[in-house]
Length: 260
Image 1: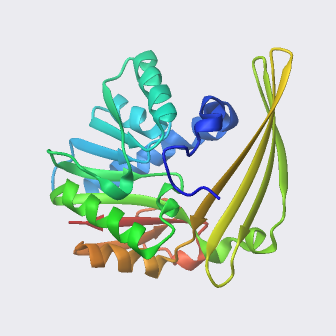
Image 2: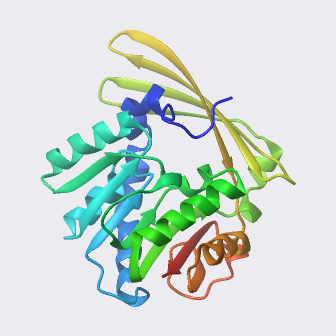
């Protein structure tokens, strides 16, 4: 079965924004509100240059650019990057998008902040993958810069442990998509096996698109450990996008905030 690689999301990159359009419209502005708050209250330097790794079709990247930040988006999927570039042009913002693997971050320049949103950090399924990503982020940051990544809380993932299938539908303009998700998380391994099938009706044609993703759930303590092993000095985990002391075990989302 495929793992993290250039083929990820290729089969339905063109439908990604259709599937998540309502969610992205609601969540991205709030997500960037939180991110800017972290930049101002936690980072130990003025944040102007931001690297958004595993940026997908660029929703948060473009919102950061809209708010005046100089942003570079990095994603392993060439198709997603192509869509992100088109969206930035349509939005009238300046953002650079590059094809690349978050496990092998290589830039000649450094950044004031690095972000990794929407569970993307969980595509690091091995200790080596996660440590490689964290070390790459650390090297990409200037002193005092901050890394922000969000992940699902494994202690609030009862449905994944039960392996309950989910079926839902999205209608957008002339496209209708039926989504069948089966997500199973190993109780001991914390590996998440996510099988998805799209049934797309578009222009009178019906197409079935199967896809598979493998992720790994991380606890708050595990996220902190990998950040510290990578060299970060000030490492915190917030809950549910609030810059305050919240018991991470009780939160639906974990937010790693690590300062170099």
